[in-house]
Amino acid sequence: MSNQMAALPMTPQVFVGEIMEPALDLLPAKMGSIEARIMLLAIALQESGLAHRWQVVDRSRPWIKGPARGLLQFERGGGVKGVLTHAASRDYAADVCLARGVVAAPQQVYDALDRDDILAVALGRLLLWTDPRALPAVGDHLGAWNLYQRVWRPGRPHPNTWLGHYRAACAALGAA
Image (tube, rainbow, N blue to C red; front, side, top):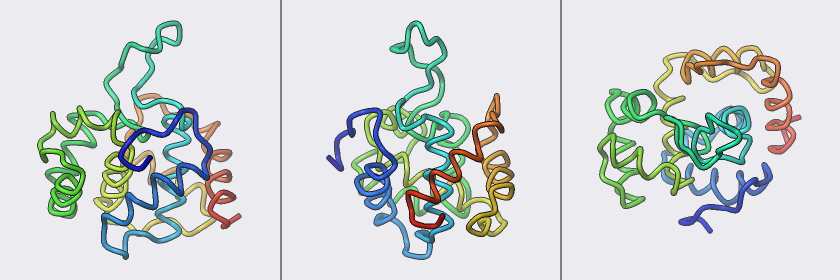
């Protein structure tokens, strides 16, 4: 299932074992901390609920794709362009794209995100990597929320759901 999409919606355990672990294996070990894992799972829960590989803008027509793609909901001119061009992430992003058989160009990466969960999560980790601040400590849900807002820049943030997603991520990763 690692090259293919997992059935949706998926459990946090499936996300961690079948998507996040292989994604982090594409990156240096220093990027695989428990803090990073919690952030990735919490963001995936917040952004897609582990149920959507593209932004659903009309719930009555969920097959119509909004501008964001992947379980972490990247936009072409935002997160995709950012990880491909940022000095801290671009070389790692090129390596990830090569490993996943995707041309490291914004349109090609964007087009692959709703078909390649591992690519999406590896790029999610790289987007977190571009932030100059340290990842929030385990249990610091407010610091995690601030990082998510700072780096993902959600158009319509939902702070009322963050704490539950953050706690679910901690529990799924044995950090509760």
